Image (tube, rainbow, N blue to C red; front, side, top):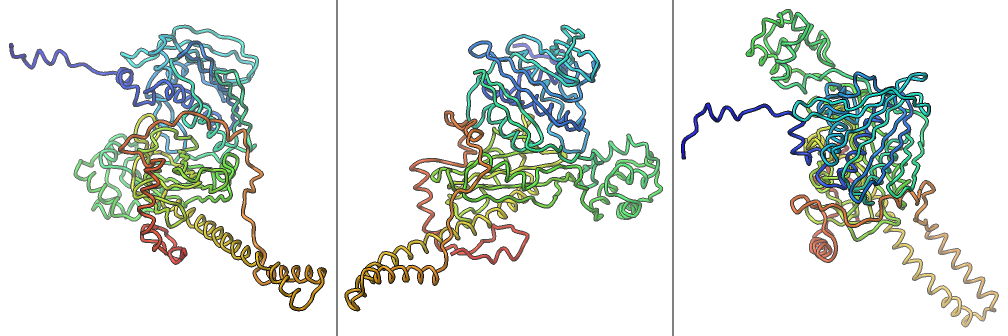
Length: 593
């Protein structure tokens, strides 16, 4: 075989468009199977609608409709009451990958990469060959623009198939998108139904009107008439900037001196902090930025690391709040005990974030299976890749035996419990473009564990209280069992009448109640529970397998045997171990009997 020359091989080299890359790797975007593809397309469109409404300070009202056109073909229709999109931007927003307004914005938003909705258009184009239809109106009295768009995958640019102005009298402003695609509609924990239900729970300010392929309409009404506080955009924090990024910023800055650059381009850097950074970097504050070479820039980066700089502000993020998180959980889970917490703000790579957690225990939940986990990031439900998520890893790493739940080593706890964790941040570190699992940054894992442990201590108090009440109830039962016999004996010895015997019994019961106190009743008392809401997404075949490498829970006989093997050792654990990372030393003194 003849040897090929470098020149011959060079002729085969060519540039790859980002659209061509995702055309072949659509699984990276969450379009790896028909069921998930349908949910992902709806998710991306709804997330964009909510972001647009909140940015324009409009209470969101989103209409979602799934129309079944064939056995495996669907049309998704998403319509919102947002501010609309101007004509010039429509093609790029919906038919160009990596185009958007949020990638460089350091403020909490659902979208981040400028990929999602255009990826849904690309998937529909790949599976049906049809363009997406977009209609948008920007104000009352104006005509709407309707376009049919396709993506040119070779150039990653939009192709406008059809364009016209139309009347849209039903709305003063808003956007509507229709995409035909291959998909599969199934109910259950990873369905469109479940996604919309959980979205309504963590976004109480929005109304969602949903019509499924069976033509059944569900309305998720808003529970709050106020929008969440607007997240303010911030500049980068010095601790989150790596050397390469610092060099790029210095090359493109308009600041003339080093001190001006530090104070204008970063958050939490005033004149005093800028001078301290320069001193630690052995540079003069008056040094011209254009005179800095790579070595001096590296010294500046090291100087930043040596300088103590206060954490970035947190008005750039908008958490759900513990009260609303628990309220949402009460609507869906009918339990005996609820608790929630919001952690203080923390920072990873210079990005501020807040972790919130809630827990529901007992009631109508199954007690012989792994706990149910509800994961959220920036008010968006995460339904897939549970085993690869830092939230799941944190739950597995928490010692739940101390808090009253059974648990095998490095696995999810078992018991009648639902755990909710939400992360708010200016930049959520997802493991892939599909945005379904959080990356395992140590700072994030630690904060999630601390939030879980705070909820766990409250759960332990409740479990111990319920156990004490149960034991007291048994003791009272034994005493009450013999009260009639004592009265009979007294009647025989003293010669009491029937009326006197009955009086003795009543007196003995009164003494028992007085000496041992009133027995508190623990049960389900949840007026907020919505049975109809809870049924949505509940019935289905088993959920998507998490895979052997990541699967944290095993059910049935094998699971029971694993728990029983460790149970004997667990009985001697009577205090919180060093695994409890609580930042409150007093909490470690709590003893469990």
